Length: 330
Image (cartoon, rainbow, N blue to C red; front, side, top):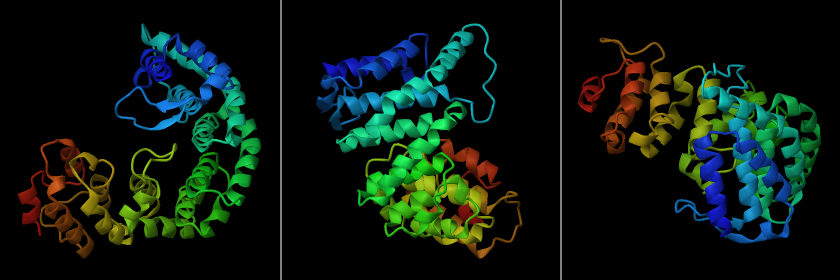
């Protein structure tokens, strides 16, 4: 019954990330009941695609994290969009959710030290999202102090890596973790924005990408701060930090065998654009790295299914849209 109720809550007041006038009061209620003993009950999700068994408390904390994520839409860029008509109702709901963030933080923070690992992880994921909000900046030092204790302890790879990601998301210094004995913790610390121009951090990311399947195995279930396979997030950071495609060519060659039609926007598509920054033009003399990349892409059957996702990326790189035409360039 609890799982079903949570499923209905998810579908009714936070459907696909949209917020409504009912969302803020629902969030207040959820925050208020987090300490209730009945939230300790463990069960599977109501949804068939989520087979995790975890405490209801952890699931509720994750739900509050999704509220925080939806409320921050457009906030970082200062571009919140123009709202009129019925959209104004949604924007009012977003503003109401934002005003709740200090209250939600106070409700969630105590669970960073919860004895159940799933609850601690869910709390950390939600706190990470909440503390990205500019109006909660005053809470960052307090939370960071708690996470430094986590990072200094002999905890699990998953918990320490998640703490490193959170610290980086809040703009905290993670350079001290670049020499951590755990490769996963090093990589998560290297992802911090503050490490963007630290050569050691870039080298760590490139090293992880040279064996992307192993990096993915670090976290079979994605960390709260990671969307999809870890290799996608590692590559996104590297593409932003490395100037020349040749510098990441070995990582690209390791990534292409794992690529496919549905992952084009997160792996081989951005790699093609990086390899051809001004676009391919007829008669262009291919470099060795460009040729190797095109050969690998053309050889991978999984990249050439029936979806049209790849067309935009191929056009962006100035390349032909057909596999045989790619082969003809080689």
